[in-house]
Length: 218
Ligand code: 3NM
Image 1 (tube, rainbow, N blue to C red):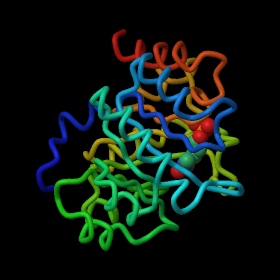
Image 2: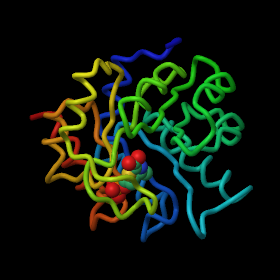
Image 3: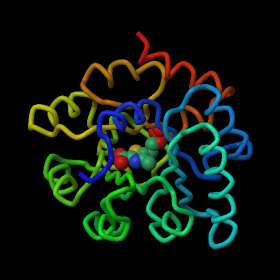
């Protein structure tokens, strides 16, 4: 799809940290600093749920986090809020099945921004590819407490199933992934691990990110 280099993108998806201000016990910019120092390769700003920032406060936080990412050359993706992604000229946007239709998002953002789409079935995966997704977020692989309306747990075997069904777009797995189960997920064929709590709620986000990154060097 377009100008996105999919080989580069599959590397950038390796350690994909996702967070909003509500996911962290200390201020998100501090957590992100540590995560960047630990070696995350992509960041998604996902400001959602009760108590989430809105309007100018949300935009101000997005700009601050985006600046941190730019300095470290870490792509900055906005979850769901296409308007915000366009306003601040983010590197990309990620939409779920319940968000704006992926094909319409692709039209709005053009070909030069990364488009990620969540898929929970082979059919959704194909529809997302058709709509112009650059990568798919697939889950939940394990039990998660970070998404209230998460679907049924699928296990790492589902990643293999998608590959066997010919899904060859970069895949990043999500849902309950951590340093203990991450290598099973990679062996099943994922290009990357996306995590909220494994980093945002870690005693040391730096160490957590470093350990996740180390799984790719083994
Ligand atoms: N999407 P944690 S699971 C944001 O299945 C999200 O599409 C999911 O958080 C999906 O790493 C999930 O703390 C939450 O389990 C991931």
